[in-house]
Amino acid sequence: MSAAKHTREAGERDSASDAPAKPAREHTTIKGGAPAGKTPRSRPANVAAMREAANVRQREHRARVDEVGRHTVYELENPMLRIHVGDCRDVLAKLPEFRRKEVDLVFADPPFNWNRAYDKWDDSMPREDYLKFTREWLDLCVDALRPTGAIWVNIPDDTCAEIVMHLKGRNLAMVNWCIWHYRFGQNTTERFINSKVHALYFARTAASRVWNPREVLEMSDRAAIYADPRTQNKADGMPPGMRVPMDVWYGQFWGRIQGNNAERRANHDNQLPEVYLERVVRACSNEGDLVVDPFTGSGTTPVVAHALKRRFIGSEFSVDNARSAFARIKAGPVRIGKALGASSAIFENRVKSKRRAGSKGIGADAIATTTP
Ligand SMILES: C[S@@+](CC[C@H](N)C(=O)[O-])C[C@H]1O[C@@H](n2cnc3c(N)ncnc32)[C@H](O)[C@@H]1O
Image 1: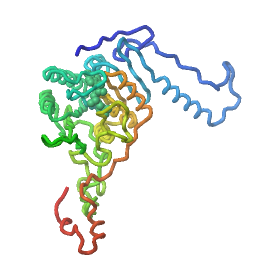
Image 2: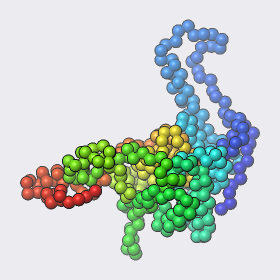
Image 3: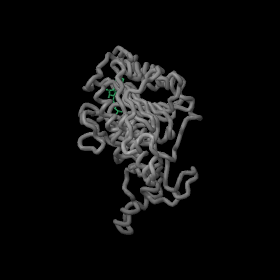
Image 4: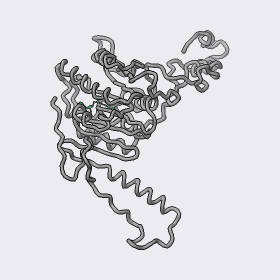
């Protein structure tokens, strides 16, 4: 796949270069102010607030589409957000933030080369070409990381090993090899049903990376299933009954986004759940940090990152996908915060079921067993 060509046209800004920018659209005047040269005699207390609200609306309105040759950029302010339309290898290499190595967190969910019917991207490359493509975008992202930065890659079985080897070869530290267990895999009788994707977490250095465990705690199984009093006084310094999540991720809101799911965006059949990105973004970045997604798709990473006050830069090969992602970001997330602190226990609360079953009820033995 050849990289698309950037050219800059008069009056338009190439956000992928350091070129001086002429605003694509002038600010419009706010209506309702005092006539020019006159001072308003009295100003109701809420005028300032109304003006600020109008300003916010204006900034939203100015979220613009800049044509840069064949490339389009969708932009928002506060916090800064840009989605560049084009091949990520072409787009990311030109970004000043990449040249200055300012990226705090990369989340990448690339095409899997599974012959999916993307509207633009060819998802059936010869294997060697796909691996070359993979190494190229990985290298761009790795090179742009800050010393405290991290990269996550969502990847299935068939290319996971190659990515792990490549990132280790780039001297990144493997922090976690998580599994997203989405449960409802496509049915087959030929082999075991696929129900997972790997979520690889590498950092520039393990010791100095951004890590916010308290932002993503879940209820421990001991607390959720057994109401074990020992969980109320935790030696690890975490709040009572809470733990850092395990490295296999599943539960309510963690399924694939299909059918009439509230998060579903039309025309995307490989959308990740918001709770997945919420966990990654909260745990591995801080407010104001720069988050990058080379494969923006339906916009799950930016909708979460923007809502959590991170800056965001994404690339997306399809202009229709980018437009849809931009609309989604402006509409806001559906499930932010809804899964935080919940239990992912796969057994029911045994204290309750014991009560239900009377004094001879189930669970008495299980309380003595060791579980996480
Ligand atoms: C697996 S989807 C990403 C889904 C996304 N994580 C979400 O939750 O919606 C991959 C996306 O990458 C885009 N894409 C494929 N190749 C690309 C490339 N070289 N540069 C930029 N985007 C690309 C596809 O158009 C598709 O939208």
